[in-house]
Length: 342
Image 1 (cartoon, rainbow, N blue to C red):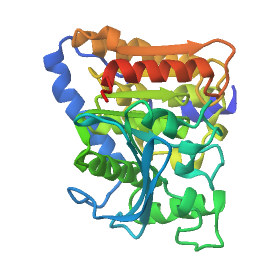
Image 2 (cartoon, one colour):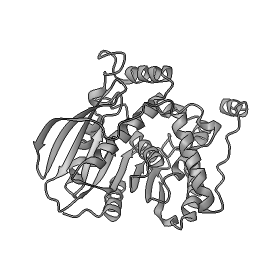
Image 3 (cartoon, helix red, strand yellow):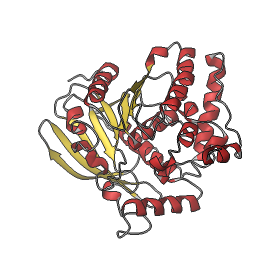
Image 4 (spheres, helix red, strand yellow):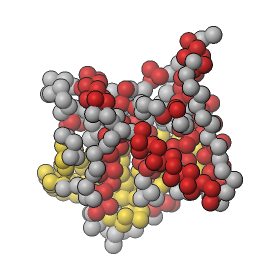
């Protein structure tokens, strides 16, 4: 017997996610799962209705305006962010909450908007020039927040990430929960902007940004749609593939498998349109788990009569990357679901 089999056989069995027979039965179960998720993330501080944002700079770029801002998250950290505004627009604009990846790129953070370290072209300028307001923040330990943890400026990168995780556990909460809390504060700010149509907001990202995407849409109904590239990870399958090493400590939520696996989380996004794109060679997202998620979540969408709104593509021979074809599909999906108008 392999080690992972011994460990799993000696652990409590993971409850199966049972799909209800009707949408009326699903609604209270959905509420129960969301409430459980929030409790598993720990005792997160309450967040204000809208964060108190300080404008740091406002610069005219080629075809758009770039604002840099900050807000205090009320838990000892200053969140740094960037907002891109289309130069040409007629009425309220659709918006994209862009979630950067991990990739060990601690210095990049939200600067991924202007880089090709994760996406085939700089996503920020590409999106804003298509008519979207674009917002991105630095997650804990990334970008301007690299070295801003309890260990001080000398403790950066993975060391700072580990210290931030330890601190949050001592406070009775998870680093992941605090990261998602920051993302929801960013969403609060995005919805409050006078330029934004709060009924037409998408969330997207690759890798850690993808996971942030489907957790945000699981916990908050305001995003109309989400696009996640990579990291559609079912945790039992990750254990069986001996793949826990492919994800950082920030990612793990204590007690989650005592209640459900990833399919329960992803199902909370229904019936909103969601696009998932993952390579079958992505070591952090075993294809067997993706197929299990698909089978369960598609049934939930079917209860709403929206099976077509859940699109889950597995790309053969593709690893943990954002291909040009995936990027083209992202842009087409946003255009279809948000319909930017100048």
